[in-house]
Image (cartoon, rainbow, N blue to C red; front, side, top):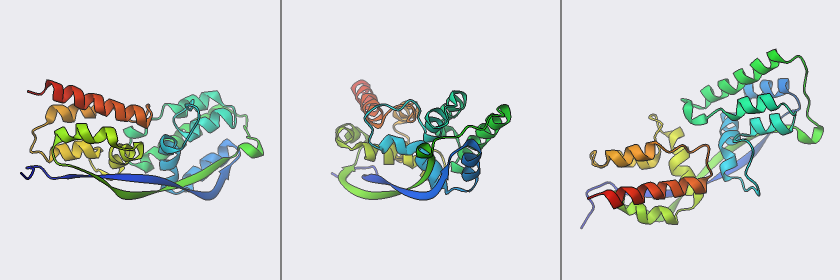
Length: 221
């Protein structure tokens, strides 16, 4: 029997890193490059770390904060940049302006010009997302419980994080799809809304989604 809901076609993605040739060796150069860099750089330096392979958990959640700490050894600036949550901004331009404002305020506070070593420059990288189909198609919300455990973390990235960039309502694809079920799953929608995708790894985010679905459908009568 055909489902009464619109099918959710699951996608996967890869984030391609593209060197821009722009680099910074001090805070002024970082600020100047931020004024002109491609918006894809802002995206990559905040979100790329979720997909880039790493052997240790990073101390900071974005590359600007990490460079402030390890490149120019400005711990105060690193902390200020590190608490910026990109999910709280309407678009990448608002996020760019926030980073610039934090850096300019720090430049006003400190007369000392902090330089990085030549091998520790900040290299601006922009991202292009490549999207492709998977074999998974979800026909009912309950089927999410069977499908999500099998998804790659890059698929979680595409549907939960990149989706917000594509949505005028700042929604992930799971919540947007739940809306298409004629309002039958408001509680599940709200439970997913409470997830914060920025301060956890993609694997943890995936596990949190699974836990929400298990709890919801266990309690559902």
